[in-house]
Length: 422
Length: 125
Image 1 (tube, each protein chain N blue to C red):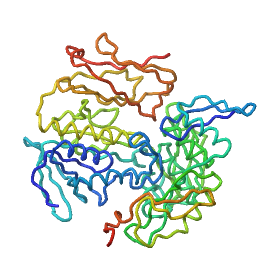
Image 2: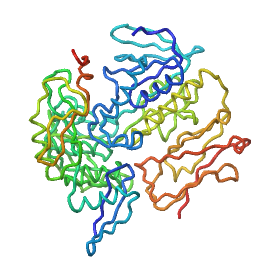
Image 3: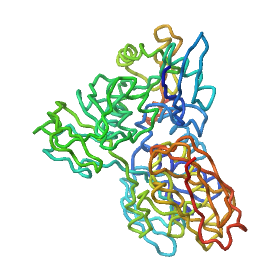
C-alpha cells in the first residue's frame, strides 16, 4: 500500500475501537487511514481467548479472536487502508494535524490529516504504581502479560500463584492458569467488594473453588531471583494494612490485576482536557475532545467492561469525524452535571447543542453498589429521561440512549443526572 | 433453595432457585434463558471450555480453540488433557473441528482463529 500525504481522518490504534471507527469513517466517504503499532491488528482481543464477547453487538457469545476477526474481515473486504508496525511519534496542530510516524519500511515520515481519532486503548497498572515493598524477583506479572505468555506464546508463567486485585482479567487468568495446571491459591482484593463482573466471579473462581479474600492485600514480596512467598495483610477501611495480621504464603508467582488506565500520551501532548474520574479525554456527544477535530473512543476514552460498547463508541467517533471534515462547525457546550458521590463518572461530559442531530448515548458508572434506584435526567425543569435499576454496581457500566430535543435544551446551561432511592 | 448467578450475558442475574414437588420456582432472572440455565445448573451444570492448542509454526505457536457447545463440568479437566495433546501441522481456518464428539457428548472442539490469516499465507499457498 502506498501511503498518501493527506487523509481526511487518521485513526490511531486497530483494536476493537479503531477498527469500528475506521469502518464507519470509510462508510461515510472520508479518506481513512488506520495506524497500528503492533504487527497484527485486533488489539487485546487477540489474547482474550475466552468467550462472552459480542452478546450485544452480534447477539451471540464469541471468543476474543472470533470477535476481532469479524471486524478484520470487514476491513479486508472493504480494503480500508491500514499500516501496521507503525508508531506515532508526534502530533502537531498546524491548521490540519501533522503526524510524525515511524516504521521499519518508511523510517520516519509525515502524514497530514484533518481529523484524528484516538483509539489507542488503555494500559494495566503495574507493580510500580501500587507500591509493594520487598525485592524485585522474577515471577511478578500483570494479568495481561500472564495472558500473553499463556495464550499467545504457550508458556505457563508460574505453578503456584496468588492474584492481587479482582479485576476481570485477573479473574479470567485465575481460571486459565488453573485449567493449564497451575495452582491458584487465591485472589486478594484490598477493597470490600470485587472489582470484576459478578458472572466472572461465578464462572472463573467459584467453578474452580478459588477463594476470593476481600479487604486483604500483599504487603511484601519475598524472594531473590524468583518469587518465593508473599506477605498478605488485612486492610482497614482506609485500605491501610493492619499490623499483626501478616501471613506468609509460599508461591512462585504474583499476578497483578489492579486496574486499567486510558493511554493518553498523545492527548496530553496536545493539551486536551482530561477527566480526573475517567482519566480519559473530556468529550461531547460526538466523541470530540476539547480540541476541534480530535476524537476519542474505546478504552482510551474510559475503561469499558464490554467490548461491544468499545465498538459502539468507535462507530460513533468514526461517523462524527466523517461529518466533521465535511461540515466544519463551531461548537457551543452545555455541561452534563452529576452528584460526585452518586456517580463515578458520566461520558460524555458536555453536549454540543449546535450539532445535536440524533440520539445521544451516555455511559456511566455508579460510585457504590446501589439497589432499587431511579436515574433521572433533568433539563431545566423538565425530566427528559427516567429509569429504574434493580442494581447498579461500579464494575458494570450502564448505557442510556435518549433523544435530545434541540428546542428544549436551548437556553439551558446544563443537563443534570440525578440518582434517587426507591 | 440455591442462589445462582447466570453467566449467559453481562446482566449476570442473581437467581434464587427452588424445586418443590417437581416444580421449579425461579426468581430474579430477566429472561427465559436464565430459567433454563438455572435448572441446568442444578441438574447438570455445563460450561464452554476455551483453550489453545500447539502448532508447529514458530510465528504462531498456539492457536485458540473452544467447545462448540457447553459440556458437563466434570469433563472440563479430562478435556484439557485431550486438548493439550493436539498439534496443528497445517494451516486451518476458524471454526474447523479439531476434536470430534468429545466424550460422546456430541460437542466438538473447534478453532476460534484463522491460522491462514495469522501466518499471513494465502489459502492455496
